[in-house]
Image 1 (cartoon, rainbow, N blue to C red):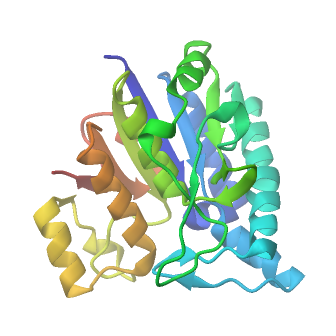
Image 2 (image 1 turned 45 degrees about the vertical axis):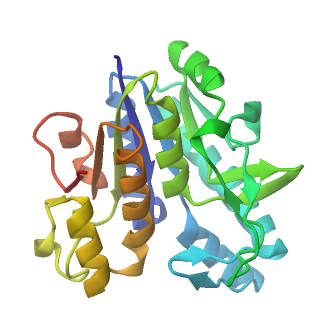
Length: 262
């Protein structure tokens, strides 16, 4: 099967124009079918603070009331997505910005209220990805760029970008040989978040459970690992977590960062 790279970019990379532009230049140079998924939580938080919209998180996931939903729609689907697409076009990469609502590409279910009410948050499954639409775009050499927004029952929903990347990878694994790469400002999964020399080079399911029990991982990496293992166990060939500057190194066999294994 043909190779497809699904790359998620987030963290402080999006907040640093020079670093982001360097990453997007590297991304544009990849001569394979590719999809980019972006986050933007820190930018949304900064803009929200200026607007008097408080950010609340549980286990690394944002609580999305209606003002926050409107905020992230504006920031993710507007400001960040448009800037990324514009920069990609400047680098001769023909990209199209998408939310889950565009082309009915990712239909969600509003997360039911349990012990925690996450508000306007969407949960998604691979079966609800419009793979035919994505396959058509990729065959036309158009690069989809996903903002972390989906929809259900006529309502836009905030959806974790790591989850979108994982679900897209699972859904498209029937058509492509997938390498899913989570890029951010760290060298990989770190045992000590303040020490780049503590990169864990490889994590399998058993070791993942051990790390969770030991509670040594910082909250921000937990959704990435959850989604990485979800992808690996549902047909995705390769998952890597690493630094945005190592993107081109991670196109080949000798990779940097953390490799996720069954």
